Length: 307
Image 1 (tube, rainbow, N blue to C red):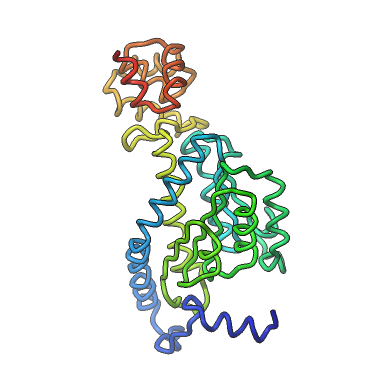
Image 2: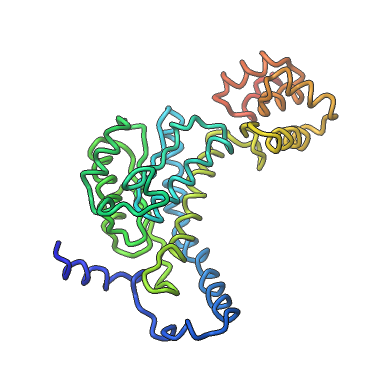
């Protein structure tokens, strides 16, 4: 593609559109600029809402595959890639997932998290190499993330993953995107022109973060990683999380502090096991067995324990 072709392509994208009414934004008082930004951001949730049926369908497909041992893989460049890496990195401490179960790939590798890697986003071959290193299976899911919906790295990742039989999701912020078209599940959250022309780290970035939150969080709910709205699979790796673990067990059981500490000690600090031990009146090993037989779903284990 020539530079002229690329300019024409970018000019057709709503995320790249110029807004003449904001041409003198730099001359406004700071508070007025802040109000403008806040007003722009207020429309993002409504844009996401239009895609909720598509998001829900994608989540159910992801959860079905992850329940069979599959992985969730995000692939993107620049801001989109960083958001994917961020979402993936937050799953282990929040849901006690293996770090290899939710993976974030960014064009250019880890260095691209803080520094632009020239040309990386334009390489479909780089996307293929990054995915091949993971040895994809049909139980895996690859989510291509790109505000424009045309980034070669994201589109290439989705096309390659689909050819390998993996589930594919394309998340973009423009209608009629190549990325959504390439994926089995296309999600297009149209947030419109940015306050600063082409700066898709703004509304488009916010929209992508909201959708990624949904994809990972609701998938984990479906996998039994929560009990109600409690993070019962939280990993207690520091003092704050240990205190949170105690509080979660308290909220779920209403048990005394002494009984909670005893249950957490007997179950090696596993919140889900401690809750089951307290609510079902079983010991730590029995709680572990019941949860294993229930696929990690606490509600199912409680039902089995009551029989």
